[in-house]
Image (cartoon, rainbow, N blue to C red; front, side, top):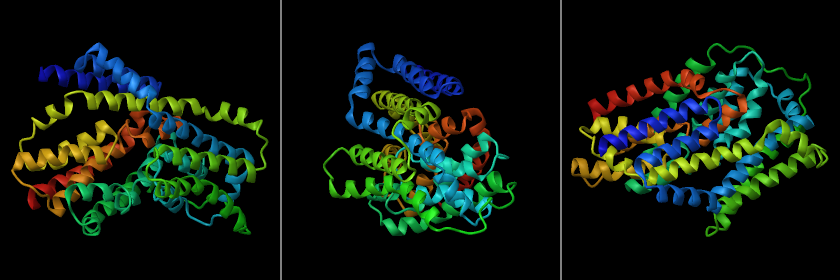
Length: 397
């Protein structure tokens, strides 16, 4: 039975990755169905499909993510994106590093679509797959140590101090910056093409439009804690889109041509397919099967952690799976700060390159790249990161 579960899981992942090279959302759906065939009854598969297609939070998230590329399209068509880039005095390396990282500090699902049009302005001499990798990698550098992100929930689960844990995870953040520079930015040279006279208003307006969505999202979530979180997200994204049309002086009739160019329905369907896979994964026995293969602490806190991050495209959920496995496997009732940092960083490395991670999927779709080329760009820095984590876990845990 266990062998059958593993076989179905690996076949579903392989199909998903292969098909996603041509069509990401179809890859997710076929991968999810195959996973279900090996693990669930026909009725249970139908139930998960129904749950996915009728879940208001998933539908609202898909709606919001579908709107995000329209914001970029409106900024592009109106010339506001040109205004922003033309008035920035920066080296291209700095722009590609800090642009996505800055927007990543205000996390929102599918938010890589906000930084993608900005990143694209660095020049035409950068390949689609490198653009994709840069957008995903650097968007997730600062958020690794951001105290109101994944750290907030995971430290609460482990009953650890948030800010002490943040100090332990800072070396991982530094390693991400160094590896990102070496593998993604080192060969990029020159400055952004800018105007001689800097007009600050032309920087402020597009930046304000881009940031309005996550800011409104966070404010409304803080004010209305008992409503579906995707409602504030949808309001924020819709507001940002309205502002883009308003300040860009675009007629609402332009929405048709912008939609034809940006294809928002693809991003909507990616989210639906992604959550169908995730829901079937959670309904299966895969988590239990994974826990049965743990044979040493380093393997669990690095190998299994990264694997869970990769197959779920999440951070909090893999940590919630990992924590009880760690407690029961090693007969402890607490986790040290070093073990926590290594576990979270390893999960994060798997998460950063996971095709189930919305930022990865939507970036690949936006830049016209594919999973194979994305992996070629990111697998080595991720492997080095996990090797460093493994050595640290062997000698220090």
